[in-house]
Length: 299
Image 1: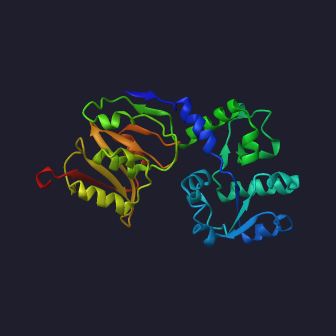
Image 2: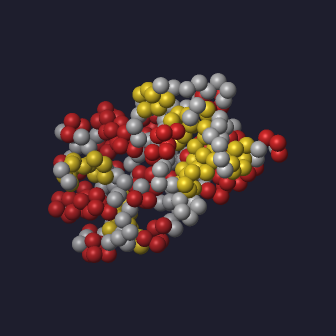
Image 3: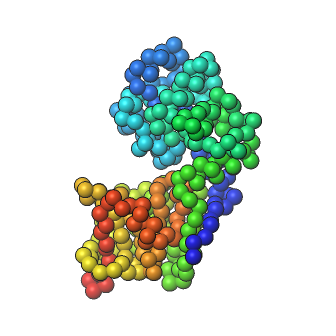
C-alpha cells in the first residue's frame, strides 16, 4: 500500500544547518562579470575550469546545494563571496545578480508557494518568472530567518525533489534494510549505487558513500552478480538503467513482489524508500534496463 512519509524533526534540523554553504557562489558569463567589475575587490573570481578542479568546492554538499549538474554551459566564471558581500551591492545590482542565477540554473533558487512567503523574507530575494514566484537563498538571509520559517521552506523545497510517498512492505527477511527503508538521510552523499550495493553486501557504512559506476560494477562482480537476459525480475535482483553509451544512470534492488529498495539521488532530500516497479519504469523509461542476479552456484 502506498503511504505518506516525512522526515524526522532531527533530520530536518540537520538539513537546515547544512543546506546553505558558508560562502556564496554566483555563476556568470564573461559578459555578466563585466557588469559587476566595480564590486569584485572582496571576492574570488574563479574561471570555470579551475573551479571544477577546486578540492574545496567539489565537496558533496557544495555540489548538492548548488546542483552543479544543472548549470548552464554558458557559465564561464564563479564568484566566491563572503556571506555579507551580496548585501553590500546596490539593490539594482543585487536583483540583476539574483535573476541571472535563476537563468543559469543555480541550485539555490527555488520555486516558492505564495503561502510560504513570510514577512521576514527580504523582498529582494523574491522574484517572479513565468508566472511563478521564486526565492534566492544565501547564507546571511537564511541565518536571519526563524527556525519555523526555515523548517517550512526546506520541507517545501524537499518535496520539489521527490514526493513524500512510499510503499509499506515487510522486510523481515532482510533486516539490514529495515533500518533504512522509508527513511530520509540526515546528510547528503549516498546515491542510488551506494544504496543498491549496501542492499547486496549488507555493509552498512557503504550506504552513505557516493559510489561511481566502476566501483559499483566491481562490487557486484565480487558479490557474484551476473547479467540475466530473460525472465521476470526476482527478489534479490539488481536492476540498472543505462544510457546509449552504457553509463549507468540509476540502479535499484528488488525486495520481491515488484517492490524495490531505492534512492533517487545523492541529496538528503532523496529518501531511501520502497518503490514499485511501475514507478521506476516510468521514471527511467528512456534508458535501457539490465537485470543482474546472484550466481549462487559459483559463490
